[in-house]
Image (cartoon, rainbow, N blue to C red; front, side, top):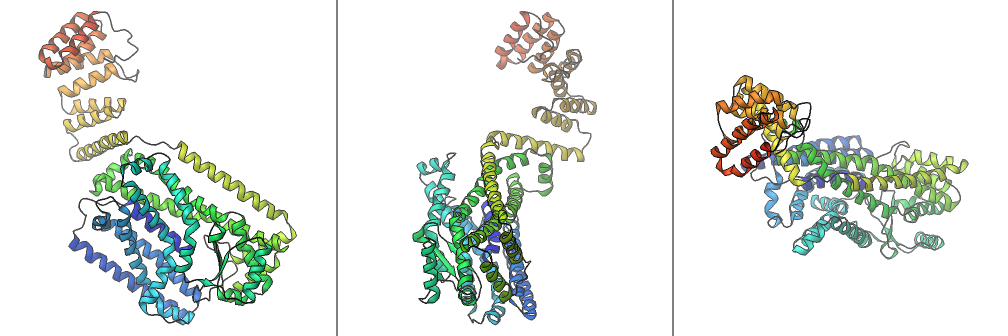
Length: 606
C-alpha cells in the first residue's frame, strides 16, 4: 500500500517542482477557486460511489483496489488543478519572496492531501467493517496521513535545508557549483538514512515487541546471524497485515518491523525464514542501493532538463503550438517539461526502479534459502500468507513478484542451485550497467548555453509568428522578406535565398535586393555563391534606395567582377552618405584598391 502510493506522491512532487508561478493566472481567482472547489466535490462524490461498491463486494482486496484507483485519480486531478488553475500563483506568497520555494511546494502538497482526505473519509466505514477498529473521521484521516507522511517528509526537509543554505551568497555559490548540489543531496540522504527510521517508527505507531517466545527466538536468530536491530511490533492495518520490513543502515538506528498477524500465523521455522529474508536486504546492501537509485534519478532528471528545454525551444512545432495556445513560452515549456518529466518519473520508478526492487526481493529470498539450507520454510510462509490474505498466487505489482513466482523460483533453486548464482550475477551486472549509464548521461549529455538557447527561442518565436501572419497575408512582401531574414539569421542560407526571391516576386524591395545580393556574395555554402547574379540585384537595390550599406554590397559585387575602380568609387560614395561608418568604407576601398578578390572560390568576409 505504501509502496504503491510512492509513485503517486512522486508524481505530485514533480508537478509542483516543475510548475512555475505566472505573473497573472489564466483564470481569474473568482472563477478558478470555485472551479477547484467543484473538482474537489466531484472527486469526493466519485470516492463515495467507488467505496460504496467496494463495500458491497466485500473483502480487503476490493477495498485496496478501490483505494489504489482513487489515489491515482487524486494524483491526476491534483496535477490538472496545479496546471489549469495556476496553483503556484496563489502559493507564491508562502515562498518568502522566492527565497524558500519549498514552502510553496508544501502548500501544494496540502492540496494533494486534501484530495486524499476526501478519498479516506468515505473509505472509513468499509475499513472499520473489514479491520474491526472504529475511529472518528478526523482520526482515520490522521492515521492515513501519518502512514503516508514518510514518503514526502524526507523531500520536504531536504529541500527546505537546501533553500536555507542558498540564502547566504557563499552557500549559493557552493550549491551552484557543478558538484555542490549532488554532494549536498548525497550527504543529506545518507544522514536521513541513518536518523530517519526512528521518526518513521513513531509515525507508524510501532512499539518494541513484547517479551516472550517470539522475541526470544528473534533475538537468538539475530545473534546466530551476527545481525543487530531493534525488533518492533508494527500495527499496520490494526496489526492484521501479514508483512515485515527492515529499515536503517546503521545498526544503532536499524529496526525490524513485524506485524502481530504475521507472528501469530507463522511457526518458528517459517518466522526465521522471514527474518532471514529481511536480514538479506541488509546483507546485500539494498537499503543503500535504494538511496543510490533515488539519487540516480535526481542526477538523470537534472541532466535531461537542459537538453529538453533546448530541444523544445529549437523545435518549430513548439512555437506553432505556442501561438495557437496563447500561452507564454516559459509557461508552455514548463507544461511540456512537466509532462515529459512526469512520464520519465513514472517510467523510471515503474520499470527501472521497480525491476531492481523486485530482483532485490528475490535476492533476499535467496539469502533465506542459503541461511536455512533450503527453500521450504520460506515457501510455507508464503503459502500461509497467500491463503490468509486471499491473494492470488500470480498477483504481482510493480515492486514485487507474485507470491507464486517467488515460490516457484525457490522450488527450482532447490533442484538447480546454479539459478541462484545466475540471479546474483544478473543483479550485479545490471547495477554496474545502471551506474555506468547514469555516469555517462551526467557526463556526456550536453549542457546548453543559456544565452544561445534564449537567442534560438527568440528566433524560433519570431519565425513562428511570421508564418502565422503569412497564412493570413500570403502575398505580403514585407512578411516574406522578414521570413527570409530570420532564415538567414538561423544559418539556413539556401532557404533564405529562396525566401528572398519569393519576397522580391511579391514586392520589389531595396532591402530584399541588397540582402539577397550580399548572400550570393558571402554565403558559406560555396554552391550558393554567384557574384554575377549578385551584381544586377545590388544595382537595382541602389537604384531604388541609395544608402551606405547597399553601396557597399554593390562595391563587393563590382570587385568580384574585376571592376575595381567602380567598386572603390562606390565605397567612397557610401562613406559620404553614411559618415558614421566612414572608417569601415575607407578600409573596404583600400582593400579593393590593393588588388582583386583574393579567391573567388571562398566567401569574402569583410
